[in-house]
Length: 189
Image (cartoon, rainbow, N blue to C red; front, side, top):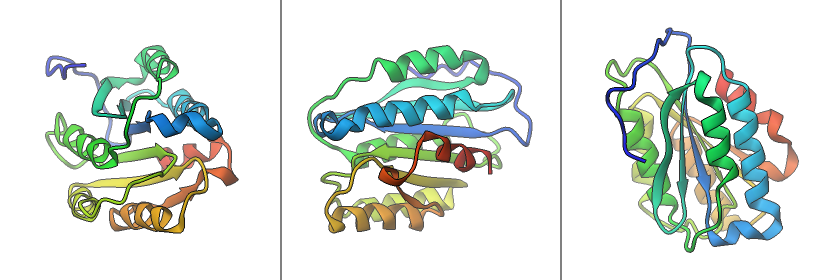
C-alpha cells in the first residue's frame, strides 16, 4: 500500500497513534502463532476511540504497510487486512521494526504525539545486532515499542527481543501467558 499524504482526520492531543507490526513469516504457521497474532491485532483495532489513528504493517520476506494511518472509523478495513494475513518465507524482524519507525516519522509533523508500536511475533530468529541501533532511534523519536511473543523460544531470542523493547521504553510480553485483552492497556496508557 502506498502512503497517501492527502488523507487527514481530526486528532486530539489525547488521541492515540498505534502501529501494529505483525509477523507473517513461515514459522508463524506453527503453534497457532499467526492466529494468535491476528486475534491480538483484531482486539487492539476493536478498542480504538474517536480521534485515534492506526497503521498495520506485516513482515515476512519483506515488510509492507497493509493499512496506512487511518482513523478508527476505518476499523473494518484494518480488521479485513489482518484477517487476510498469510505466512511468507523468512523472518526479517529488522525490516518490520524499521518500517514502523519510518511510518511513525511520516505524517507526524509536530512529533509531540507519542506513537505506540506493538510488535507481535513468534520471536524466532531475530539474531540481528542492528536491532539495538533501531531501538535507540525509536526511543529518541517519541515512540514506545512493545514486543508480544506468541510462543516460547530460545532464551537468546527472547533476551534480544526483551532488550529491543526495553531499550525503546516499552516492555517484552510473553504472549503465551495472556489473552488478547492484555493488549488494550498498552494502547490506552
